[in-house]
Length: 259
Image (cartoon, rainbow, N blue to C red; front, side):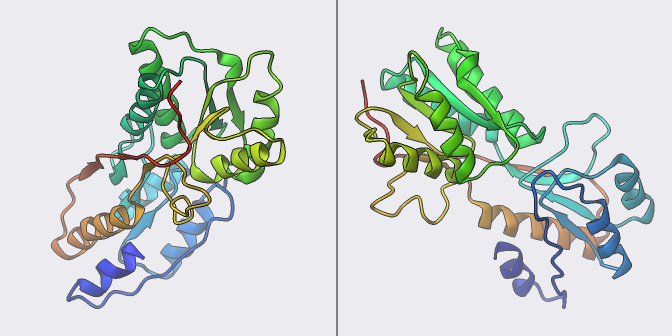
C-alpha cells in the first residue's frame, strides 16, 4: 500500500507489477528474471534471498534496485535499502522486559539467515549481556517458518522445560499469536503467568482481545520511502547508494507484567 501510494503521488506515469514470494526461504532469482523480461524501470525487493549472479546482472544492466525492510549482510552488497533498525527494536523490547523484572527470557526465531532474523536475535542477546544477565541458549528456538504454527510448537517446548521462561520474545506478531493461543488452550494466563511480545505491530495486535505488546515496524511508511528512493533513482539517474534506517517504537499493551 505504501508503494502504491507513493507511485500515485509522483507526476511520472509508473505502474506497479507484483511478483509474489510464497515462502520466506524462496530464492527470488526467477522473480527477478520475470520482472526483467517485462523491461521494468526499477525493482523493489522485499527479500534479500537473491544470488550474487543476479545481483551482478542487475548492476550490469543498470536496473535501479532498492531493498525494502531487508538488506544482505555481505561486504559485496552495495544496493540501496530502506529498513527498520531491527537490532534496536529487539534491544528495546528486551530491555523493557528486564526493567520489569524478567531475567529468564525465551526467544523464538527463524532459522532463515536473513538480516531481520540476525539483527533481532543480536539485539536480544546484546541487551541481556549489557544488563549482566545469562542467556539460556535452550530457550532460544529456531524454526523454518515464522507463523502461528511455529508459535504453538515453540510454546509447547518452552512450557515443558523444568523452569519455563517468565517472558517470551517472538520474532514477529504471528508467532506471538501462536504462543498466546497455546497459553489460552493450556490455562496459562498472559501476562500473569508469562509475558509475551511480538515484532511488527500488524493490524490484529491492537485488537482488545489480543492487546499484544510489540515493536512497531511501520512497513507502510518503509514502502513509501523505498519507492521514493527508487523513483528518484529512475528519474534522476542517481546511481549513488542510499541507505535509510528507521527508528523502531515499542508499543506497550497488555501482554507484559512486572514481576
